[in-house]
Image (cartoon, rainbow, N blue to C red; front, side, top):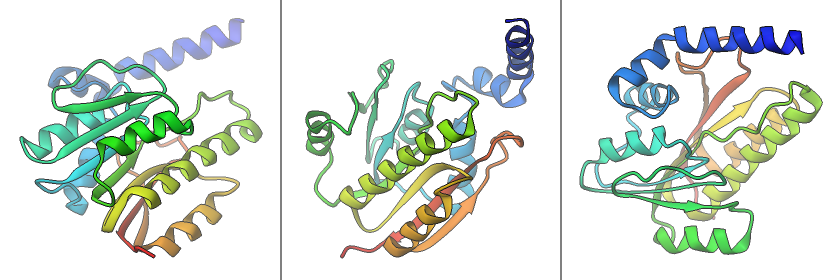
Length: 208
């Protein structure tokens, strides 16, 4: 218990001294994760006016919040998560596990068939600290996000998916390259240096 307490104390100290946490609080964002998307959006020119975006694993809502601000009055944001999320104006939210058919159908009912511009996923499992447990769980979520992208994206659409480097990583990247014209692995500055997370950025989706 003492070790866990010390570890938790270090995490809390690091969290509240994190400049991205402070900036998110000062600017009214729901989490520091917003700055990962902001950096990639600016460097890659991802989000365009009028776009339709699907945000997977959206809670607490920072990415949806950013997308909504970027799109202004045009475009649409559909968000989903197993966890509840406080409402965001002009963001359509579906709570539930999209592996379940009724949840999946509710999501599909909100996005026009084959008209989604971007599928974005910042999903991650609850970490146990045991790599042999955590890595398969994280890869499964990334695979689910890639599969969802394949179901809803329009031709030329894109996906941004959190991935953890480890077992299954190379196979996922190969699969993405088979579906998209351009695939890159990027690590935004807001991603903590010690984290194995990177983002799979895929563009120019190919409709088969």
